Image 1 (tube, rainbow over the protein chains, first blue to last red):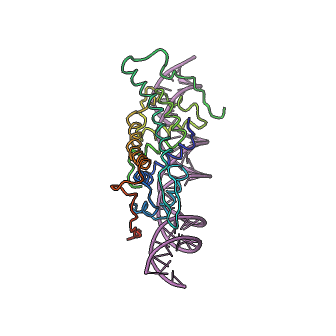
Image 2: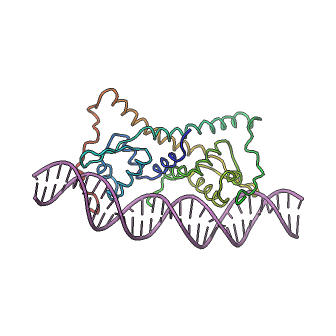
Image 3: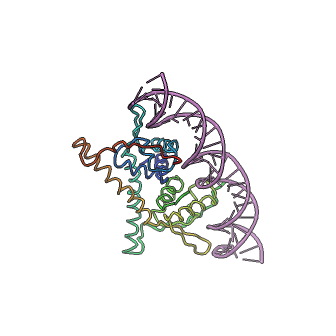
Length: 122
Length: 122
DNA sequence: GGAATGCTGAAGCATTTGCTTCAGTATTGG
DNA sequence: CCAATACTGAAGCAAATGCTTCAGCATTCC
């Protein structure tokens, strides 16, 4: 299975439109920080912070040559995030299929209502 | 902020471990709000807020019968989010393939360095 | 009817986010 | 050497987040 914490970071990284656009651009190949910043109406400092977040989430790798830092996609983490969907898609797809053919099977009930006692301070 | 695309909302919804766990559970079928809250050590009010956010992101649908609100997964939006990965995966997969076979093709350069003039306050 | 159940809304609060500006450090080009 | 370039770091700030508590309001059970 996957680490929850890393999925937290990856989804959070992708929740920001600026960062998602950066990832989309990086899908075309490595780009320097300045070039990556060019399309956006924010300061270079802000972009630097986005790059740092993307890097610590594992979505990108960076390397500095001279004074230029080059950012590039790290495909593994992106694939990991995608797998989360795939693993759960099969669950509800199977379920929706059954709902189409027969209304309910005897081996899996629709969450029998539990006696949910208030779980607060015990 | 500017505009909240649905992808922003969906990824943000999935970035929280509590909400992601709720979505995972809902993949098994519809659940009431109380039953959904049971596994988590937070107040019912907090869960209600998560449910509301999940609903406004389009990830779930809810309906109230009597005093019980039932939450259920809305597969379409989940599929939309997954497609984002698929559409960009092809880009970097193709690229990595080419890097494996030949180092560089003449019709696509690795982002030729632009003369990036400072774009700040114009 | 009265109590328990299942939410729902509002207010408050500590923390995080996404930006800003300003000041710095290497590196590179003339 | 000197200036431009490409970041990098720190401080600060408004808004958003994720919780809390308390107070309601229907609905269902006894």
